[in-house]
View 1: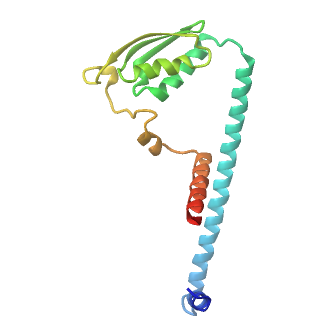
View 2: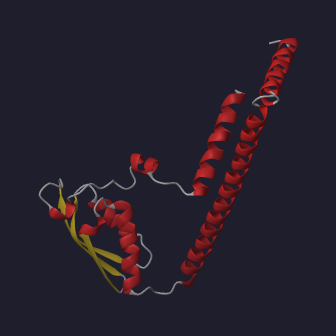
View 3: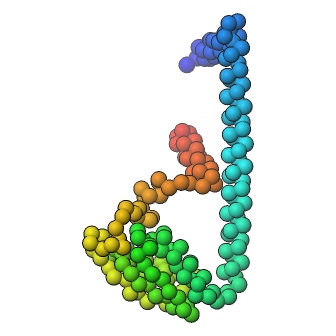
Length: 191
């Protein structure tokens, strides 16, 4: 496209916009709508920036607290270890409530029902929980959930791509994903 054609198109667009907004009969209403939309967009942007800032600050505070607790190297009591293990079970087991957890002196015992293909991952991830020295696996593995009351009900499989994509994203994650997608789009556009 030549510069003369581009200038003509830009001039036509500016002229049409001015005619639309300065129309004697409906121009005032149209200008008010544009003004309201701009004010709303500014407010939404300001609110989103505040939420993202608070989310990032909370995440940084959590990371600092986690680093301090790891550096302290205090032995955790059985209740704290059980809660950490329960939190990890929620990430790796499709039916975490079907597994009972007990802990004594760094030894964690897992009792209950789970799908057979999940048991190795459950035991492995529980073994990595801070404060766990040994895992005693007394989980009954089942090839399928039918006929096992504790394994009934719909449950998303943690860690699966579809579950991750449908999960609600934090504001910080959305900003990071949006920034990454924009960077990729710009890089691909330059090629």
